[in-house]
Image 1: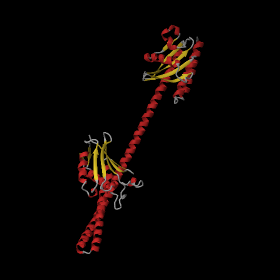
Image 2 (image 1 turned 60 degrees about the vertical axis):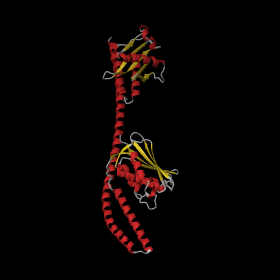
Image 3 (image 1 turned 180 degrees about the vertical axis):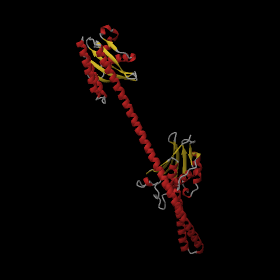
Image 4 (image 1 turned 180 degrees about the horizontal axis):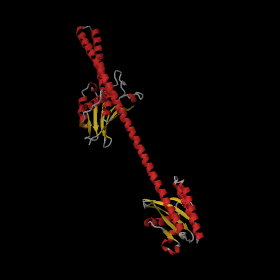
Amino acid sequence: MNLQNSQSVEQQRYVLESLAELNDQAYILSRYLHGITCEVCQLLNSNWTIITICEEGDWQILASHPLLHEAGPESSFHTELSAILLQHGLLQHIDDVEHHLDHQEQLGSYTYSLGVPLRTIYGRVIGTLYAFHQHPCQHSSEKISIVQSLAERAAMAIENYQLYQQKRLSDQRLEQEIATGLRELQAIQSKLATQERLAEIGEFTALIIHEIRNPLTTIEMGLNYAKKRLLNTSDQKRLALALNESQRLKQLLTEILLYTKPQVLKRSRLNLGDFLSELLIQLKDMPEATDRQIELTFTQPDIHISADRDKLKQVFINLVRNAFEAISPGEKIRCEISSLHAERVCIHIHNNGEPIPPEILPHLTTPFCSTKPSGTGLGLAIVKRIITAHDGELTIHSSAAGTTVSVQLSIVP
């Protein structure tokens, strides 16, 4: 008896030492669990040992000895036994199938089985460890105790691995959120830096324009006086040219001031369809609209936005004027309102004029870039600044079929 006890203690010590070595490889869960199945097979001299877990009613084989390459009849009857074990959460010990006829079909070609629940430290049963024999046999309580200890270690390893996976996913989500937050912060900082820079440029520009306008007004007064005195045709042509250039210079100064001035919005609730319908009626009287037509269509009549009426009017006056200048007399431009989804609306202004050269298209909203011989290039730059201040988006597409300028704005309920 003492000899048997001594052998049992030595065997238990051997298994625990082997388990300690396996703990060093716990970062590879499959290897760790396979090592446990090997130890159980060696300890109990079983023909087949398997570890499975159950997640939301779905069984998954984590380790087996000998290895299972595909699900077969054995894994099928094992699943049935595991379901019973999982339901009760107690040790299942069938020493001879002939004495347990209710399990005869479930055991298949095996006559003996030992099933141990994989119980976490919180008492939750997450799976099973089963050892099967093809011949009847008996195991001591010490060996069964060791198997239970191995099952506890397997449950702990599985739970730790699941927690690690959850932590890794959580860390990935956190990293993504941090990265997104940093990008948003950088965008805000860039926007603030741009606004501060434009504010400084605006103050400086306003001072320069004020200093230029005063002498320009004096020069213009002198030219008008000379126009009344000098009646010669040649003199009149020269004076008219000088006055036209002074007017163009004043217009340029006004546009520069508008571009550099901070966009302070006075928002109000607007019915977009009504707003554009009224505006386009007024724009039919502009000189650029002579012998040209404009057509307004919209799929949804009641779309409301929050916008600065005067600044938005400035946007569409500029875009419609550009569209009229791009087409020939007798042609028409189309203005279409379409809702992209519940939160955004898009206004398309299309003309079938000559396409814009591809090398110029990306730079059209850059100051002093223009397709017009006498254009300043500030019109679209101002338009983009106003739309950006409204949290909108301006896009321009041009092809052989014409040019479409699209303005996206946010819808308010």
